[in-house]
Image 1: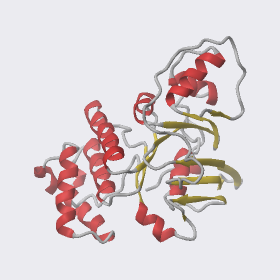
Image 2: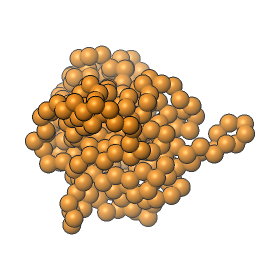
Image 3: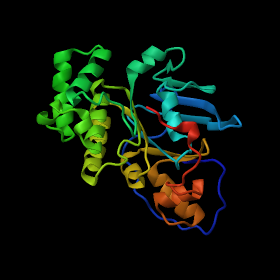
Image 4: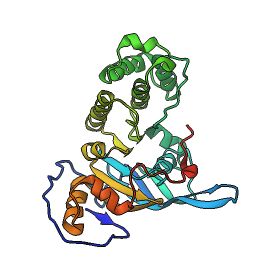
Length: 300
C-alpha cells in the first residue's frame, strides 16, 4: 500500500506497468506482531553556538513485518542515520516508542540488544586485531560457543569472499571493502532477528558491492532476519527492498514497494517511471545534497 504525506502537485497522468514483488510485504496484518514497530519517534538535538533546537527525527511511524527488507532513502542530513541509531539504542528517544518483537527499547533495552545488530558506513573495529580476533571478541560478548562461532565466522567470511589466509591479517591492513565485509560478518555471527544496515555498501568497489547485496538477500531468505537498510544507491534500494520509506527533514513523506512508488509517480505525477523520479519528487533534493548534518553525525 502506498502512503504519501505532504503530496506534491499532480501533472498529466502517464501509467506505466511495473512488476510487483512476489514476497509478502506491507505492514503486518491485525494480530501479527511486527518485527520492528516505530510509533511517533522524535529526536531533537541542540546544535551550533546559538544552541538551536533541531528536530532530526520528526514523528516517524512505521511497522515492519518479519522477513522484510525495509529501505530508508533520504538526502544527507535527512534523519535516516539518526533513526537507525535510535532503534539500535545508541540514542534515546525524546518522544514516541520503538519495539523489537514486542520488546520496548527503553524498558527492555538488554533484551533488545540481544535481538539486533548494526552495521554502519564506518564500522568500528580493534584495528590492530585480525578479523578472526574481532569476531571472536563479538562472540564472547554474546555468550556464543567459541568453537562453533569460529566455524560460523569462517563460513560467513568465505561467502563474502574473505579466505582463511586473510583472517589473521590486522584489520587496518585490509581495504575499505574488506573491512565492511568483516563488519557484516560480525553482525551476522550473532544471528540477529533485526539487522540494521546503515549504508553498508557505500564506498565499496562494484564487485564487493554485488557480493554484499547478494549476501543481504541470502540473510533475509535463510536466517528469517528483518533488515532495516539505509542507502544512497537507488539501484540497490530497488533490488533489495521489499518496501521503501522516503524521509525528508526528519519526516516520512512517502512509503510503498518500489513497484508501487514507481507506478504512482508515472501515473499520478507524469514523471519518468524511475526511483530517482520518486526521490526527487518527494524530497526536492539530490541524494548528494549536503544539509547541515551536525545533528546526526555517525561517530561510531
